[in-house]
Image 1 (cartoon, rainbow, N blue to C red):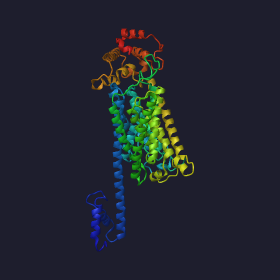
Image 2: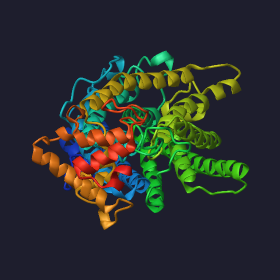
Image 3: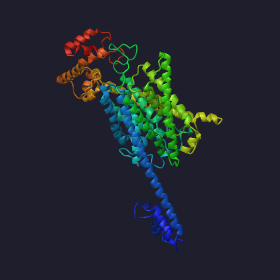
Length: 585
């Protein structure tokens, strides 16, 4: 046929394969193969055409994979907008600019830190052929590099930035900029990458894709309930334990516990709701997009669809369970039913966090159970934090830490053998619930999930708790009392956005400015030295003696918490030119 009537065959391949072999629009597979093998050897020509067409398909598949990875990464990066809106709406107006800037700096600092060292620690060497045959604590190649795939680097960078920004909301309204920059870079460049390497890298000691997975199964954390959310939530907990609560939240001016904690409602519920919906949208890049990372899997589209369904169901159930359970409790306590929108928003986010680990491996019913429990866990843990006087401005700890842990565990309980087979090609160790159905008890996966949880807790505790203690010792962690009273927008950014004072009296701002100018004139304000506890000014000592250094009854200057407040006021009026009502406040 080729020798005596080549034209129909030639026309067919010119139509179907033009420009697919060498990348040139003027070439086609058939003519290239004829030139390479001559027109007399039919077998070689057909083999050449087959190989070239397969190679072309692989290149197209790789290009599409990279393109969709960038698209999903962009959706995840858009979650930074949601975090910023949620945090801004949850704080008082006098701290909005500061909170928004910190969210912006998350993305900036994480990009540089992840490029310089973070990617290397997390995934350096993963493109080597023998990467899955060894186990390492962290990667050692590709420093200051994007590795072999720019799309993969970008996708993983957006995950690291998400982990960093979780901490921002918890510390809102009282954390210094220097401290924020320090821990953002450390988290994105060192802490998060070690966790990501252990669970997601081919050579990670907990990785499921390693040739010798941990306990024969390896950890399943499909999109990061543990790697991203639990890590960020734990660090937020350590930070707020050292930082302390906002002034007046749990203690009065004399350092005595308040009978009822004082609520600090955010200035905009609209921003909070919009931020929640933006985050939910981004989660559909976060969870289904992770299917693109499955090694050599031809069913990633079905896996992504399963992840999207579970994500929608768990988020919805979390919001419903938190809203109506709180409604029932309020009605029983007060006799009046209240629909609290904050419960619905944070319940939905809790459900999304919890399903992130097992979204691709749970049947719809189990996703609903996971989301329902997540909503209840959020309610309980949020209330518990208030009882133990831990101040979380946006409830990031209950949402991300508690439900990140639940996400790991729920995967160990509910991972479906059918969906494990679809994603990984085997279902040797399904969730504990399904092992009962099969007539046995297989807890290998659950034990792996518990091991991952303990590793993340241990690693972050060992590294970040001492780091925050050191920042606090240096005086770089907490803003001083005057700055906190007038708002960080005034003290760091020159004024409150929109001109509204949000309850900040004009004399407070004037007193703060006089205090700052007085220190500058005396030459004691050099760089950030006014914010270091080793150089506390007399006015700062006065202010802290009124409030209590850590609001637990101990003053910085060693004075008695019950010292005469009238004497404090007279000292301020006389020596520091402060208005009486500012000192009383």
